[in-house]
Image (cartoon, rainbow, N blue to C red; front, side, top):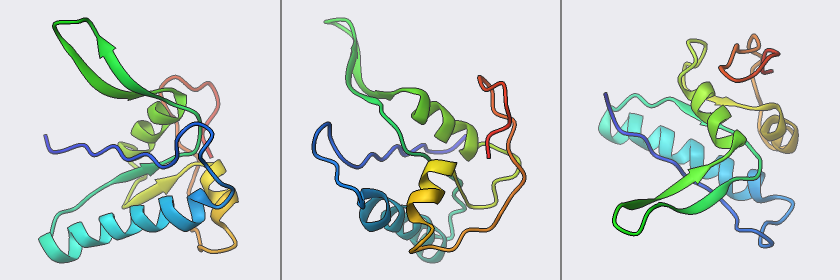
Length: 119
Protein backbone atom coordinates (compact mmCIF):
# COMPACT_ATOMS: atom_id res chain seq x y z
CA UNK A 1 0.00 0.00 0.00
CA UNK A 2 2.71 2.48 0.83
CA UNK A 3 3.86 4.66 3.68
CA UNK A 4 1.90 7.28 5.59
CA UNK A 5 3.70 10.22 7.15
CA UNK A 6 1.88 12.45 9.62
CA UNK A 7 3.58 15.72 10.47
CA UNK A 8 2.36 18.34 12.92
CA UNK A 9 3.62 21.83 13.67
CA UNK A 10 3.14 23.64 16.95
CA UNK A 11 2.17 22.52 20.39
CA UNK A 12 -0.64 23.76 22.56
CA UNK A 13 0.17 27.32 23.55
CA UNK A 14 3.31 27.39 21.41
CA UNK A 15 1.89 28.20 17.99
CA UNK A 16 2.34 31.59 16.41
CA UNK A 17 0.33 33.38 13.72
CA UNK A 18 2.63 32.54 10.83
CA UNK A 19 3.23 28.86 11.71
CA UNK A 20 1.51 27.66 8.54
CA UNK A 21 3.20 30.09 6.14
CA UNK A 22 6.67 30.03 7.72
CA UNK A 23 7.03 26.40 8.82
CA UNK A 24 4.24 23.99 7.94
CA UNK A 25 3.57 24.64 4.27
CA UNK A 26 7.22 25.19 3.25
CA UNK A 27 8.21 21.91 4.96
CA UNK A 28 5.29 20.10 3.33
CA UNK A 29 6.29 21.31 -0.12
CA UNK A 30 9.97 20.49 0.52
CA UNK A 31 9.17 16.92 1.59
CA UNK A 32 6.82 16.41 -1.36
CA UNK A 33 9.38 17.78 -3.84
CA UNK A 34 12.33 15.87 -2.33
CA UNK A 35 10.48 12.57 -2.57
CA UNK A 36 9.78 13.19 -6.26
CA UNK A 37 13.13 14.70 -7.30
CA UNK A 38 15.56 12.68 -5.21
CA UNK A 39 13.77 9.33 -4.95
CA UNK A 40 11.29 9.42 -7.84
CA UNK A 41 8.52 8.64 -5.33
CA UNK A 42 5.04 9.97 -6.03
CA UNK A 43 3.41 11.40 -2.90
CA UNK A 44 -0.05 12.75 -2.20
CA UNK A 45 -0.54 15.28 0.60
CA UNK A 46 -3.55 16.56 2.49
CA UNK A 47 -2.71 19.65 4.55
CA UNK A 48 -5.14 21.09 7.11
CA UNK A 49 -5.18 23.45 10.06
CA UNK A 50 -6.93 22.72 13.33
CA UNK A 51 -6.75 21.29 16.81
CA UNK A 52 -5.67 17.69 17.26
CA UNK A 53 -4.84 15.31 20.08
CA UNK A 54 -1.22 14.16 19.97
CA UNK A 55 -0.34 11.49 22.49
CA UNK A 56 -0.51 7.92 23.63
CA UNK A 57 -3.64 5.85 23.00
CA UNK A 58 -4.34 2.31 24.15
CA UNK A 59 -3.77 0.29 27.27
CA UNK A 60 -0.76 -0.35 29.45
CA UNK A 61 0.36 -3.45 27.53
CA UNK A 62 -0.42 -2.32 23.99
CA UNK A 63 -0.38 1.34 23.05
CA UNK A 64 0.92 3.72 20.43
CA UNK A 65 1.45 7.40 19.78
CA UNK A 66 -1.32 8.87 17.66
CA UNK A 67 -2.55 12.13 16.21
CA UNK A 68 -6.34 12.33 16.26
CA UNK A 69 -9.01 14.88 15.47
CA UNK A 70 -11.22 16.38 12.76
CA UNK A 71 -8.33 18.18 11.06
CA UNK A 72 -6.34 14.92 10.89
CA UNK A 73 -9.33 13.09 9.42
CA UNK A 74 -9.85 15.83 6.83
CA UNK A 75 -6.16 15.74 5.86
CA UNK A 76 -6.48 11.99 5.25
CA UNK A 77 -9.59 12.56 3.12
CA UNK A 78 -7.86 15.26 1.06
CA UNK A 79 -4.77 13.09 0.63
CA UNK A 80 -6.80 10.18 -0.74
CA UNK A 81 -9.13 12.30 -2.89
CA UNK A 82 -9.33 11.46 -6.57
CA UNK A 83 -8.87 15.20 -7.24
CA UNK A 84 -5.45 15.20 -5.55
CA UNK A 85 -2.55 15.40 -8.00
CA UNK A 86 0.03 16.36 -5.37
CA UNK A 87 -0.92 18.62 -2.46
CA UNK A 88 -4.46 19.55 -1.45
CA UNK A 89 -5.04 22.02 1.38
CA UNK A 90 -8.16 22.98 3.27
CA UNK A 91 -9.65 26.48 3.25
CA UNK A 92 -7.96 27.40 6.54
CA UNK A 93 -4.47 26.72 5.14
CA UNK A 94 -5.28 28.50 1.89
CA UNK A 95 -6.56 31.61 3.69
CA UNK A 96 -3.55 31.77 6.02
CA UNK A 97 -0.97 31.23 3.28
CA UNK A 98 -2.50 32.98 0.26
CA UNK A 99 -0.28 36.07 0.63
CA UNK A 100 2.89 33.99 0.37
CA UNK A 101 1.81 31.06 -1.83
CA UNK A 102 -0.22 30.73 -4.99
CA UNK A 103 -3.03 28.19 -5.02
CA UNK A 104 -4.93 26.64 -7.91
CA UNK A 105 -8.68 26.35 -7.49
CA UNK A 106 -10.09 22.82 -7.56
CA UNK A 107 -13.61 21.55 -7.32
CA UNK A 108 -14.77 20.98 -3.73
CA UNK A 109 -14.15 17.45 -2.47
CA UNK A 110 -16.76 15.03 -1.16
CA UNK A 111 -15.22 13.78 2.08
CA UNK A 112 -16.50 11.01 4.31
CA UNK A 113 -17.91 12.42 7.54
CA UNK A 114 -18.74 15.81 6.01
CA UNK A 115 -22.26 16.70 4.90
CA UNK A 116 -21.16 19.55 2.65
CA UNK A 117 -18.44 19.47 0.03
CA UNK A 118 -15.05 20.53 1.37
CA UNK A 119 -13.64 23.56 -0.47
